[in-house]
Length: 266
Image (cartoon, rainbow, N blue to C red):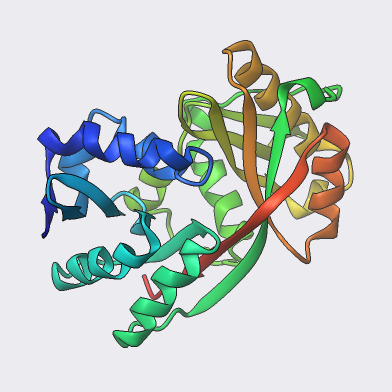
């Protein structure tokens, strides 16, 4: 049986996602939000009363992911596609990422670009803190962080900042470093699970690169996460970004797998 999932299914989805906690961190973190079922949509495949696979569309970001048995994933992708959710990206750990992207491709939904990345982990005992002047982000930083996000995605537009762009900025868990009165670098502790945190949005303004500022933001982020009792910090970086890989290795991160970000027309 395939059907849309609702609040009463929350625990069943969490139970399924926690079977692979590391790779389903984005799903878990968003599902545990109080707005999980008002902002997002979930679709499940059942064998009798047991949930076998789930797909999730997150309205705030336009992101789409799936979890569970590989054989059942296409059916929950089909359910979301039939519901006409507006998919802007598929950010998932391999190999399930390719299952989702290929099934969407068979539906005629072709990604604009695919980014192949490395999946990295920093365990508490391997952490090597770096000197840092980073501070927690505040509301006054929101627009500056939007501009950094545009830079990350090679968008040099001078168009006015939109409320949608502002809404995508996660201030809670974000750290910033200032240089010459500007937000020069940032990193954010994004979604959380029982044991892990996913670091996202690690960006340095092009004017301030090669000063160790992003490493400082990441160090402050990791220190807080470990102080809160997390087992490890996870993140993804493009396979050809050797500078970022060197930064993360300096902190103690190691590669544990592969990740795919497929981007579609927004």
